[in-house]
Length: 344
Ligand code: BGC
Image (tube, protein in one colour):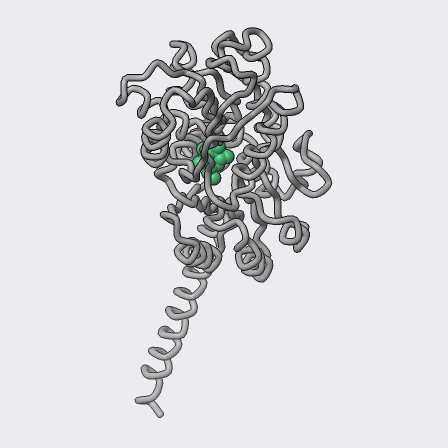
């Protein structure tokens, strides 16, 4: 019996030690949990797209600014899908497994939103889609999904209006051969991207509705890319030469691609219009190398994405806080045109 006493004592001491360690680790765990930053996963279809890169730079700046001098702590984790929806799905799944608080998703394939929505719903994590709009049926799947983008049909209308205004002020500026019709080329963004489809349709419609006759010489898809547009435009200039009176582009990068071809061939041609408001395009317009653009403002998109995200992190209802948000939880960035003759 006597020999047992030190053993019991040792056992009790061990019990106390283990208990103490458990309490220590448990409380340390809850403390760091409470102090942890809010985690936002940002998923981009392709960071080599200049429009997306500008938007993400602005988003990062907003997150840094908001964190400076406040006790608010965010962690914005940007993931580049490099054009692979499968890769993006994996990135999203990983962040959901790591308890992210909000997902901001720029889909690679906008028709794949359902998969992302289902995963987010399972984890009860809200999603802010941006720039690549899920189809309506997907937006209706859950009340905790949002979309930030541009009004693409309006972009196209305004792009067409740049041509109409120029033509009405001086028909010869566009209808160079004076045959009463404008021979044009259409350079489109990505196949099935809502911005490409709607801009193409609305720009042409606006010009026709103003009573200007249009004759399409040719057109092609350049996937929003400057390099692809240069290749297309070089081919068109080769084939149609001075017959080309106007080149409508779905975005500014492709317009810059056309200007690269113009410079390379050494042509005097500036009837090129785009959409976005890239700094380089604004400079080209200023130098009269391009007709105009519709500024849809990547930083303004970033601000809206940030505001919706912050509302969600705060547990507020974005529909109450964001003035232009529609009942179907969509908010569109403001836009304006810049032309050779000024800003409207
Ligand atoms: C922009 C393009 C961009 C595309 C990406 C469009 O709204 O105008 O420049 O490449 O979005 O999805």
